Length: 394
Ligand code: NCD
Image (tube, rainbow, N blue to C red):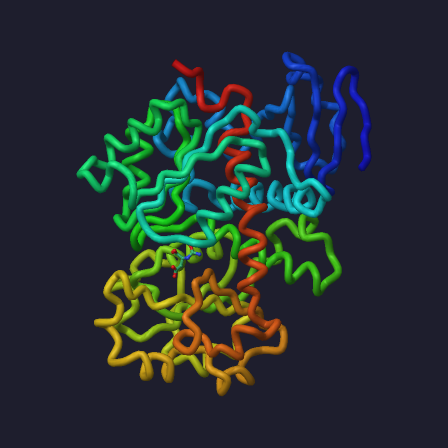
């Protein structure tokens, strides 16, 4: 690791474009002109805390409302980030992916912070990866088990959130079956940051960030580049086909926003009954059938039928859905040689993807899960890493 020094400060290079400056507390405002020219982000760590990079800079002062409050202090939608913010998250995630490869994959960055996960809907990957990410950043993690909580006695979402925040929580990671629930939670919290871990049909921003990170990683491996050095240029003109239950999918909405913000060409492939009633304002094309669309795609992003949101009523039968829109073994030869197949999980083998296809290297679902930790470390770091972020405790 390259370590130029600047007076009392030490700069450590975490990746080609990410540097961490370690300075005694109070010295974080050092002369920035001596930073390495190639750095795109320098995160100051002072006694384990860090200042925020630009994308979420408005989060630094929780006491003062952000201009677009509650957005800016929270991550509710991919639209909160824009292309520059997505690029920044991917860059920081790359640095944390390096931390994860260490013998002891833990950094003290969020020591003293408390992160609560509030999942009102089932989850395996998202919840575990947020909790792992928080622990690797040395935050304390508490997890509300909704099924055994006072929610079951009729306590409202607002009272639940206010109760949790009263315990001095710095961030709430919220999953809810109602679209808009994390937006409401963000309005109710006084100092805690809110991260949307999936709300109804609305959005699942960290999943889309994981997907972007994974796609860039695979492209970089093939070209022999360092992923961070690619920035987000590899998405420019990339042809991405999103297949499946678009109507009920929060993942699809966040993917469309993220992929198109980065300059990708997005096409949707689904039966008409599983497309949203209106696509006005969506920067997408629609494919009439899957077979002809597959060959044009650099990336195929598969989605699960959201049975819990009633999608079963929109398809004649699972067999017919698979025959028309599933990535079956018969369709495999239609894929371009360089194609990448993503799936956010959980996969329903035999429905949207054939079991044999799911296990082929072309399908990067397991890699997406692995990358979920580094990407969520980046999100938590960007929201909470500022010295004083979260505001003073009462
Ligand atoms: C997705 C979700 O919950 O929205 N899964 C996930 O977070 N990995 C997709 C899905 O459940 O189909």
